[in-house]
Length: 320
Ligand SMILES: NC(=O)c1ccc[n+]([C@@H]2O[C@H](COP(=O)([O-])OP(=O)(O)OC[C@H]3O[C@@H](n4cnc5c(N)ncnc54)[C@H](OP(=O)(O)O)[C@@H]3O)[C@@H](O)[C@H]2O)c1
Image (cartoon, rainbow, N blue to C red; front, side, top):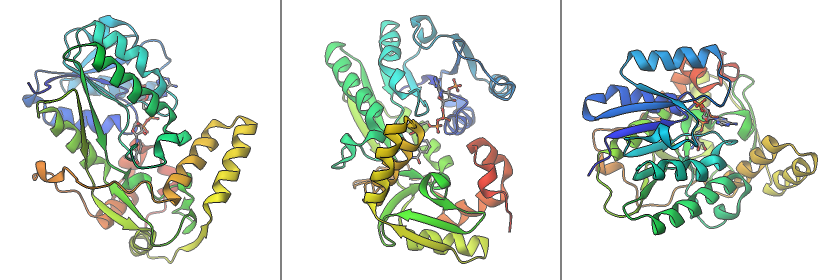
């Protein structure tokens, strides 16, 4: 059976908002679409307003703690779209969901393929690995329980950011890696479309993986395209991977977790491990045609709403 009674955990985050929009767009194909309103954490007015907007568009709001079984009652599947600092919360949430009868979990992954050599051991993926191990264990214990990994490489909109050493407004970049190293990118709206489309394919096994890619691009191509969109020539410096590793070590010493994660991510990127291995599953959903690199970058400069949702407005606000 396909997964048509859907609960989203982390609905108001950067990616979560796109997933909710896509669920709303396709709501007639689903029995129930719902979002958890996590009452254990403070919520900004903007997030409360956003949740109310979802509700007016047919999303059921389920209030409670994500570790309380009651919130999961009556749902087939949970899509966890949790941020870096919340990914490790999933094992307790999975327990609560399974106790309530949920039979499928989409873990908060949505990035590089963790099975690419080296990724499994990387700090950036530590909590995703913990979650994978837990899901495997749970599926072995609970008959009928399964999970889906959705892999994209990186979202195109997140690629040209200071997190990866790129400053679009200034037209500058300090890249860990080399000009011709490829990475897989997909626009975030298309990523959400693929994700929701997978729910309508009934899982045949307890574990399944989908890989979706918009394109595999070198830094040369990325900067050529950004330069074209912004009408400027980028000042680019390529840095050795060891430098990012050294900074990561310093971040560990000072307890700066975000810097530690960013460095780990830069090392992954600098060693070509954000390139998603084939086969890809795009062809299973021919109606979804990912936007081009140029169109996606153009949108980032022209669409303030998009930048605001992604929380990157300040980096891109210089419109050409
Ligand atoms: N491939 C890529 O390039 C790419 C880019 C971005 C993200 N991603 C992946 O997509 C997933 C979501 O990322 P995101 O950027 O959308 O995350 P995010 O905006 O930082 O956070 C998503 C949601 O997680 C919950 N959350 C955040 N911090 C929390 C905390 N400390 N405790 C409890 N809950 C917390 C919040 O849920 P509420 O809505 O309930 O407040 C928040 O809206 C991650 O797995 C990430 O790796 C991939």
